[in-house]
Image (cartoon, rainbow, N blue to C red; front, side):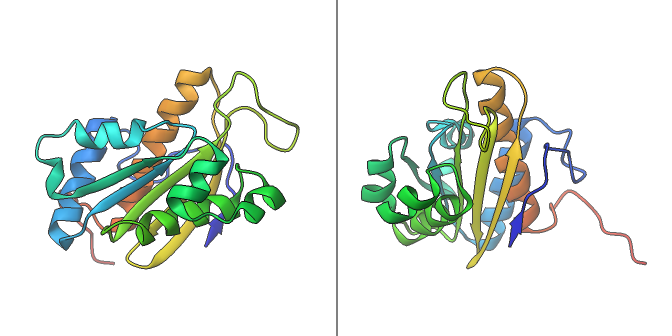
Length: 184
């Protein structure tokens, strides 16, 4: 599934939680399922993996992180076809999808999050301005991709990317154990 919503807007009850709370929620859901998580990161340079491993005991649910900043690393570590990068660019839906799928294929994880984007302040183009990020999530064999554009400087774009990647991961993993669902 591809979602092209822009700019980023909070979409669920977890939207106001900070990143450590999102990590804790993801951890709880992954542990409940008995799944491991892998990350494949370009523009965030390992910040998502870093946020995950800030939580004590994360080795019970965090399997590995791939920092694939260069195109060659995307190909060598995740198996992203170089022709795909050449045809669409590193910051694209097909590459984000291939990164998420590659993280699953090259790990023991059942869930993965991948990010590739233009954090700035340089590197943007009319088609892919600074702040453009493509996300890929693979959860239980289902892949979802989405493009967002975040405002702010490099640090703000990267922080927003980490937060949104984790927020959406929690939503895809299922209802948060701390929330209740009302019957219609």
